[in-house]
Amino acid sequence: MQFMANFKCNHTAHSVQEYFTTLRTLGFSQEFLREHELVFFPSFLSLQAAKDFAPFGEIGVQNAYPAFNGAFTGEIGAQALESMRVRTILIGHSERRSLLGESQECVAEKFAFFARLGFFIVYCVGEPLSVRQQGEKAVQNYLQAQFAGIDLEATRVSVAYEPIWAIGTGRSASVQEIAQTHAFLRTLTQSPLLYGGSVNAGNAREILSTPNVNGVLVGSASLDAKSFHTITQSVLL
Ligand code: PEP
Image (cartoon, rainbow, N blue to C red):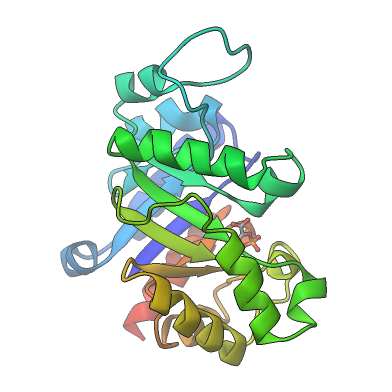
């Protein structure tokens, strides 16, 4: 299973250091680390602290600009990431699509650029509530459009299904909805499929037992080290 923590615009370099100190105290068995994968997406300013203090797992970025370097004020390019040995990136998160105005073309350009560099890409897709209310077929059509210009074979990819209405709302998709939508996504790719959207210590086990779910992408409930640790350990129950 893949367990991914998206800190979004939360935590500081100092609190990230404390986070990993707590996680180290809670610990992971060698067997767990052999069988499962941990990925953390801190903010840019706590990236170095995460690299320095995470004793396990991969550190990735929540976004980057599709250029090696150059005149792109306020952006972070691949050269800076590679200098820190960061080779994992989240692309297509709904907050970037809706709040930051990233179009499918922009998302696809980022995907192609970082795929060319061989980054591990966690590619997010998900529908708004108005689409979910129209039923599964409408959801599938919506998600299909979010793969426009995306070559899932171009690099190592995990696809995260994150219904927008479930993100940060405390209302996860039902197991039936996850099962149905993941079965559809499985027809598009053999890549690992993650579910994200209000995953917490109480529902992780059931979600992880759903067919075609190969892991979870966790926002709010990953901010606390103990809570994220409990989520990871639910796979052992
Ligand atoms: C997310 O934003 O990727 C996410 C899944 O958030 P939350 O767990 O808070 O719903």
